[in-house]
Image 1 (cartoon, rainbow, N blue to C red):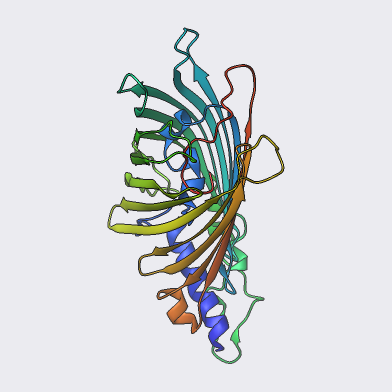
Image 2: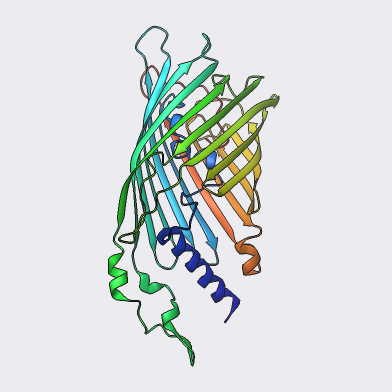
Length: 356
C-alpha cells in the first residue's frame, strides 16, 4: 500500500476515534494565532475592547493528508458607565465557530454568548481584573461514514473494495449530537492603557475553565462520554525596546484530562508614524512560535488602530510528520476590525496581544 494512502487511512481512523469513542482527551480546535481568537480563547476578553470589534480566524491543517478546517467569527460590544469617569466596565460578545475533519466529513459547530466585567484595581485603571462567562452549545455529527475505509471493505484478493458499503444501520444510528457548554475565565491586565508608542511594559495573564458542565458528547446511542474540563493558561508581555519597536513574548498552556498542549512565541512590532488614515497601516508584526513536540510557526501581520490582518504557517515536526515521511503543514489567516462609534470611542492605539 502506498505510504500516502496509508497515512490517509491512519488520519481517518484517528479522526473517527476522536469523535466516536470514549478514549479521546482533546476535542477543541486549537489555533497557532491563539491571541487572535479572542473570546474563543477566554470569555474574559469580551472586556478588553473599547470599541465595537469584529474578528475572524481561519485554519487549515494536515495539508497533504485529510485536511482539517476550522473557522470562527466573533463580535464584541463594549460597555462604558454613564458617569463622569467613563470607566470601561466590560463588554458582551458572540462567538460562532465551525470545523470539518477527515474524509468522513465530521462536522462540528459551536455558538456562544459572552459577558465580561472589568474590575479596576488601581485608581488610574492601569491594572484591571476582568471576569468572563460563556454559555453556548456545540453540535457534532458525521455526514457520511461510507467515505471511510473499513476493515469489512477489505478483499484479500484485490485489497480495498469500495463497492462494499458500511453497515447502513450503524450509519443511520449516529445522529447529530447537540449539547450545552459553559466556560468561565479571568484575565489580569497590567498597564492596559499604555499607548504602544509610549515607553514602558504592559502584561496580561489569563486562566480559563471550559466545559465546566462536562456535557455528554457521545454520538453513539446508549453510550456516555462526559467531556473533561478544559484548563487554559495564557499570557504575554509587551516591552517598548526603541522609539518604534516593541517586543512581545507570549505563551499558551492547555490541559484536558491526560492531554497537554503547550506553545510559546515571540514577535516584534515595528511602529510607523501614528495617524487616523483607515487604510494606511501603523504597525508591522514579524514573529515565530514553537508548539512543543508538534510544529514550528512563522507569523507576519500588519494593521492600524482600525484593523489588523495576520498570517501564520505551521511546519510540522514529529507525530504525523514522522509517519508521513515529510512535514505536515498548516496555515491560518486572521482579521479584525474596530468600529469607532460615538463620543466614547477610543481612537488611540492601546496595547493588545500581537496582531489583535
